[in-house]
Amino acid sequence: MAQAELIHRGGGDSPGSIVRWRQMRSPRPGSLIVPADLSDRTDFENATRGLVARLEPGVIKAADGRVVYDADAYTAATSGECPDTVNPSLWRQSQLTSIQGLFEVTDGIYQLRGIELSNMTIVEGDAGVIVIDPAVSAEVSAAGLALYREHRGDRQVQAVIYTHSHIDHFGGVLGVVDADTEVPIVGPAGFLEHAVSENVYAGTAMLRRGLYHTGMGLPVSATGTLGVGLGPGTSTGTVGLIAPTLDITRTGQEETLDGVRIVFQLTPGTEAPAEMNFQFPQRRALCLAENVTHNLHNLLTLRGAEVRDARGWSRYINEAIELFGDDSDVAFASHHWPTWGPDNIVTLMKQQRDLYAFLHDQTLRLMNQGYVGSEIAETLELPPELDAVWHTHGYYGSVNHNVKGIYQRYLGWYDGNPAHLWQHPPEAAAARYVQVIGGVEATVERAREFAESGDLRFAAELASHAVFADPAHAGAKTLLGEVFTRLGHGSECGTWRNNFLTGAQELHGPVAPAPVSSAGMASALTVTQLFDSLAIRIDGRRAWDLKASILWRFSDTGVSYRMELSNGVLTHHPTSRTKDADLVITLTEPQLLRMLGGAGSDDVQFDGDPTIFTKISSLTDRPDPAFAIVTP
Image: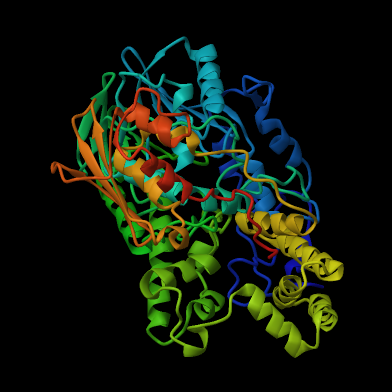
């Protein structure tokens, strides 16, 4: 039996019903590990506790009738017994994340869960409500707010809080407030910088990889995606951003919003570069953002991001225990279900604290003994107490790729072996491997032998070389797709499952680009960020012979920027100098946004050579939202 299929699948959630190969965390690939206690139904009780109402039907549509989220599909896909195409541990987690509706967390605090990847929390105040993390898209946050109002009255939004800088925690803001709202928008220090860096600068690449990460193009089914472990699927509606108007700049900062006192804790560099926990002292309720959830999170997400600081993450959890642990009766987060009772809260937080610290410290220990990331990832074994509880399981992150992320954070991509310093890129390497093996046919045959013997990992590597050496070879693509599918069906980690299955999908035809876009964030960008977005699209080779300069004068703010193109680089900076420029452009910031968006330059004043901006614009390229990943 193949390694990814070394799973006994028993009946449902009865005690002892499964023994699984925990492929993404096992210290020895192929070893069988006894699962956490299946008779413990606490997570299911907590995930359904306080249910006020389900969203009926669980289908959310855009104004044009397009479905942007289908919660009913996840409920249907995870009903009944675990099928042979899903890791039983992931099946259990997916059943939990598919539970949807409006839930009362504690007096005056409600959550919308299961109608989006992330949770939206609503806190009742004196005159209205505070919305925490308004989902990915406006259609979802509007539907969630409507469900709340149906049962709690037509309370108006008095403030919005972003816990951190990831799009699933701010993208739906325009579904709960208007773009010109005057209510406070609260976020951690550095929020806008990091939201833009992650979702705009590298947005196209991250969205493309994110499609594989989330399985967005897969059917919601027992043979397709069941979510990402952190939550069900991602909505595909309208994304927007309103910049924070109230920054949280220090731990211990207190703010009163709509009569509700809140005490904040900054946690930068944990799950996001800009993130914060906070407590509602009068309600003894603690919001843990995305720092403490019911799974092992990512230290390096498969969609791509900055490597996160496992040591800092652990220390901030410890600080939260000291600040809030004894004074909280309920802890809730931006994903998953709450935890009630001070003892339970502290136990959860301590175990999560120890989880990230253990991965960090043991990776560094073995690194300093000369092991490289891939070696450490194969050998690291969690302590029995941590391994025995469900919330340490790698449903979203994994021990394997988190260890490699820690290694990368400290030592980078190079493992110190000069043989790996200047390797060929994929297509060139594939041609050489295939040549050594004896041709594409021989490579496919060897890959098939490894697949049949149960070594799916090496079978995938060989078959991938065959595909990159000869993309038209049907046998190579078919075999690689079969291996990816088997690896996906055996994965405990939801994001590994999605990556494998979407990779298999690409081998059968082009994978459509993600039906979401960060374009709706443009109006919140600063001038510098807008110019940065232009600069990273300059084709250096085509541009390196042109020298040009523009002085941008903004009549609405009184600020000027100097832009220069030289050596294929577009630099820009605020300036108070009146140095000569080839072109002077006088306009407002909204006019700049329209110009860069291709909407024309009416009412914009040009002094000097009017072709300069056109020449610079012509040297940019267009990002490709559908680039191939598992094929050349």
